[in-house]
Amino acid sequence: MDTSFIFKVMVFYSTVLFAIIAVVLGFIYQCRKAAKTGEVFFYLTFKETYDDKGRLDLVPINSEAEGTEDFKRINEGFGVCFGMFFIFTLLVMLSLAWEGQVGYALPTFIPFSLMLATGLWIAPIFALLLIEANENDLIKIFLSTTIGCYSLVLIGSSSGIDFTFLEPILLLGFLPIFIYYFVNGVPWIFGVTIGTTWNVRPRVRKFMAYYSMVWFSLFLLLQSNTARFLAETSPEDNTWNNAVEVAMQLWITTVEIIFRVFEATGQ
Image (tube, rainbow, N blue to C red; front, side, top):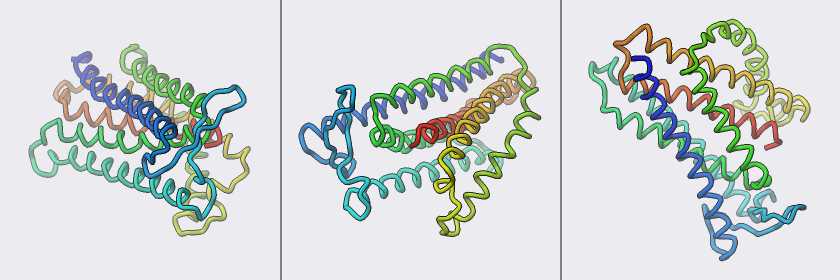
């Protein structure tokens, strides 16, 4: 029963994770193709430049020059992708709560398709962040991060080790994250730029990025470990819909880790 439930979780989690890797790499390939032909891709025009090692390094033309058309387009692109990511995340949660509210569960392919859509909307953001820096170096970091997250899920769900001792540590360790992002995030919500996480000192931002990255990594390990114990103690919960729900929780934490890695690298 344990293996069966974990297998279901890993089917969904693996599919989304590796689909994202494929989309990110495909997106960057299309950007490079558009740069060679001078065409527009994702409403942007790209220029071929080369880094100090002689490697091709794409640059979205005028994307950093405030007031230009490309600057507006790339910010609009980020906004649309982020917005659709959160909308589809909400739809996944609603579809998973359908059984408790209505009395019967939706077919599993519906919440899973919505979950896959969250990944497909966040993938362009990952790709553009890689391109805006230096995709040659950050692709390796991105791949290492996703594979590392996948390994943590495997360890937590299959190693047989009880990681529940992490619960009080993570509970206390979340306080600095809450203070940092809440205190700096509330002014941003109300439209005040001073005090946001983008205006704190770079050293503080980098430290909190690394700290959050470690915290979410341990949290991912605990989440996957909890899934194993769910399968052991509650065989009746060994359903495909519950597996989608667990996989979605793992996926959201993985997204957090990836963004903390980007923040730690200055993106």
